[in-house]
Image 1 (tube, rainbow, N blue to C red):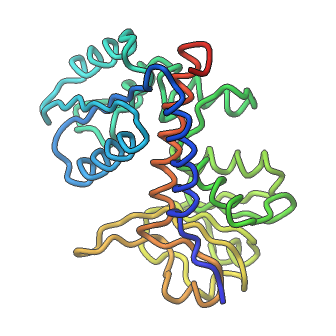
Image 2 (tube, rainbow, N blue to C red; image 1 turned 90 degrees about the vertical axis):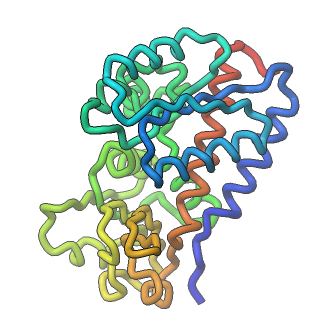
Length: 281
C-alpha cells in the first residue's frame, strides 16, 4: 500500500513547536497581511493564515485595500509597514489587480520583514547558501514534508514540473542543495513522461489539472502535488491522484502542501520577531 503524503500531520508538529516558542516570548510576534481587492480564493487563503497565526499566539492584522487601489498607494502602505516597529513581518497576498506590478511591490518590502521569502535579497541569499534567510514557504514546506515521511533525497532523481519563481525554481535549488539530481520541466518540455518515469521524486507545480498520469510515474515514487485548480466546485491538483496513488506515494489536493505552506509562513514570522529583537524572548 502506498502512502498518502498528507501535509496535515507534519504541519501540526511545526505549529505545536511554534506555539511553544511564542509562549516563551515576552512580546508576541506580529504579522500583517495586505489584501488588495476581493478575490474569493485570496480571501480564503488570508483567513486561514490569520486563523493559524492566532492559534499559536501571533498577533495578525489585515490591511485590506479596494480593487481599484493604485500601485503608488500600495507602495506607500508597504513603506509604512517597513518602518512600523510593531510589525515583525508582512506579506502582500497575490494575485494583485492588473494595474499593479507585483514584482515592484515585492521588491519594495524590507527583506528583514519579507516572511514570504520572495524579495530578490532573500532569494539571492538562499542561492548563496546564507543561513539567516527567509525561505519561500511552499518550497521549504515541501522539503520538510519529504523529511517527515523519510524520503531519501541525496542521490535520487527529482523532477520538478514548473519553473515559476514561487515554487519551481527555489524548490529545484533546495533539492540540489540536498544532493538530488534535478530535472526541471516546463511548458516547452518535449515528452514529459520521459523525464517523470525516471524520477524517484516528482514535484508537480504546473497548474494543469491531472497532468501527471499513472503511466508517467515509477512504481513507488514520491509525488508532491502543488497544483490547485478550480474545476467546477472542486479544487484539483496536477496529479491524477485516484490512479497515481495505486502506484506511487502521493500528496492529496487539498490537504497536502497547503497546510505546510501556512506552517512555514508562521515559522518565518516567529524567526523575524526573534531576529528583530536580537534574542529569544
